[in-house]
Length: 134
Image 1 (cartoon, rainbow, N blue to C red):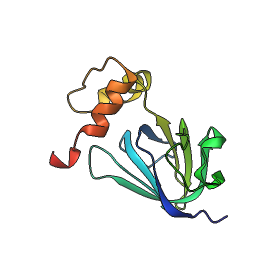
Image 2 (cartoon, rainbow, N blue to C red):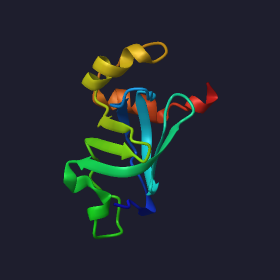
Image 3 (cartoon, rainbow, N blue to C red):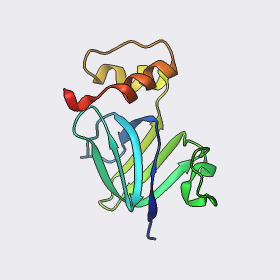
Image 4 (spheres, rainbow, N blue to C red):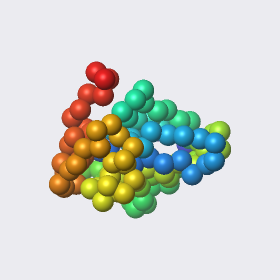
């Protein structure tokens, strides 16, 4: 099955990224994931990540941009999760970052272990910080 996004699809969102495949590692943050052709890429607190897609599943399914009928993307539903199988056989999950997900899975893995009070505050921090400066 060939996956191809003819136009770039970018989510102005932050996800918790985890690999489910032994022997692979991934930065725990996926900032502004972008789908284009058969690739998903995102920024993170390091050098960024790019993966070739074999299969992709959006949760909820209604957030799948391939099911969209119009060209207006301003009201596109943001996926709560994106599950990816790469061409190399790696299984990845991107889970939309909430305060709870951050505290349980990310906080102890980022420099400074910043404390946040809300979902919006944690997302805004990672969307607005330019990690390329560090």
